[in-house]
Length: 164
Ligand code: COD
Image (cartoon, rainbow, N blue to C red):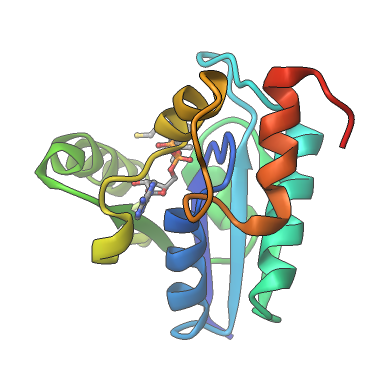
């Protein structure tokens, strides 16, 4: 049984994340999307909201070997706790590379048995990030096509204060 971990903040999940989830789920037996309880960043969405939005987005793409779980502490400890041995990361552009290389090497330094695999972003999503989605939504721009349709209203209502 080959288990991969796809870690991130997912604040909120975007179509770029979902694309990586769909593609990664096809090359492993079990994919666990690990949502970081961050002590450095202050997320816009609570952990429950991020996990719930990811769950709905994943159900909408019929990936039935994907689970969502929160984690805190070191990523390599979460990987070991889940009996996984591969970390999946998405790469959008050269600008992602330096940071991701540093993380991959540090994770390798901590746990040499764990591999990091990089998936190139699909061309349609190579410009997409959670922060850009939040900025567009904050100023009432159009986020259609950037995030899964089923969570669009969650994001809009976060800024308008409107109930869903
Ligand atoms: N297309 C493809 N991939 C994408 C896209 C897109 N449009 N957008 C984002 N991604 C990728 C990112 O490159 C990343 O791999 C993943 O999706 C998640 O993205 P985010 O933005 O939600 O998550 P980040 O970058 O905030 O996540 C950082 C981690 C949680 C992975 C990192 O902080 C971590 O591992 N923390 C745990 C603590 C730890 O172990 N620290 C030491 C590490 S050396």
